[in-house]
Image (cartoon, rainbow, N blue to C red; front, top):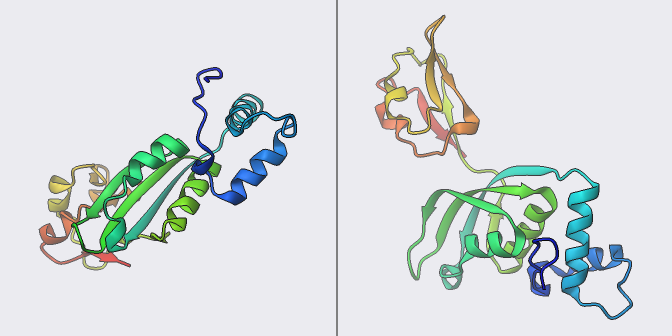
Length: 188
């Protein structure tokens, strides 16, 4: 069943705490309607009556060996309507996997998706490492700007100083070995 272009989700798409909250908000909960119709009602009411708050959150996911083959980004997109941008990944069969991912979508959906990920046994760390530039060491030579694929590093024209746009950085770390004075590093 489709309601105004909204595909109903399975009951298992939400953790139990979120399922109960959604069911309580549904006015026809006791008339025998299905979970899908309740979820479709809730989604249509939320999108039409209120402003949807979207959020971007960067997290590090650490997979146990037995969960490396779980299609995580697919399930987040399909079941929770959360876009997952993989920033960095180290996933090898039969070894612990690490995935740095930027999740974007409705704030409730992102939180529900993270609860689901944790319920699988995947460790979620909210803070990933970031690029740091030491202004005392930096000589503003601009070598790092040439290797930055997202243009997160650039030299601004009036004063010719290095500018770092943190929200554009994807942590590729190509700038670190390029810096001749070692002013660029990562922090945990």
